[in-house]
Amino acid sequence: MTQDTYRRTAAGQHPANLSPEYKSTPSRAPRQAPIVLPQSLSEITGPLLLGERLDALENDLTKQRSGEPLGERIVVHGRVLDEDGKPIPQAMVEIWQCNAAGRYRHVADQHPAPLDPNFTGVGRCITDEEGRFRFITIQPGAYPWGNHPNAWRPAHIHFSVFGRAFTQRLVTQMYFPGDPLFAYDPIFNSVPDPAARELLVCRFDLEQTQPDWALAYAFDIVLRETPFA
Ligand SMILES: [Fe+2]
Image (cartoon, rainbow, N blue to C red; front, side):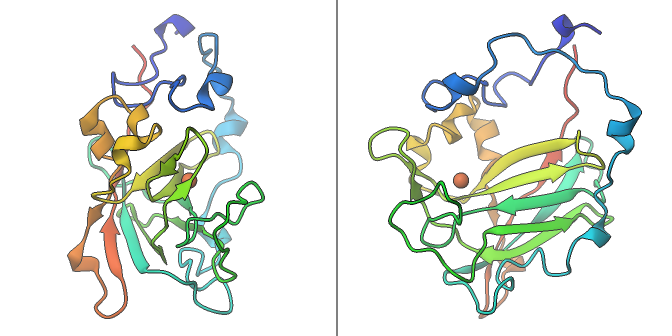
């Protein structure tokens, strides 16, 4: 295999590395063709991301502090599957997000919205034998981000999925149905194919809603092998 045979994505389903409307990509996007790096045994067998390393409540972002965070409590659940629909167990699913007011607990976010002392915005869990994951969290707010005048991100939750080693990783974002900011967001619209864009939007799931307690959303993640021609 040579680097000439490397093909990053199916056409239109993933954003280009260089998406000029998303202003930080011109300085980040590679200017040369990618090189395939052979993996060694240590990368495959390296530290395993086993479930026993997680604390029991790491998937519940409403119980990480002494009090409950402010905002609308939601359940976010789904499955990690391969492209044949087979569940992927033992995958580490991590999320991070802003709070209900649209602010991240991060030094880089200093915009004038309140922090919540009871909300870190970070959670983790390991998929079970059916590839399932489940988080309890707070509906994130929209936030301004300075990409262009009056730029606001649609509400979203960041996702990272690790396989059994650090070399197996997917990073993506999950959005909520019907957000009026979709049409104005260069990150959401950096995915060229509208049908692929819709796959980033979770589904309202009435069945998993907890009466008198929380709404629920479903978001399945389908992993495809990096395609090689
Ligand atoms: Fe974000």
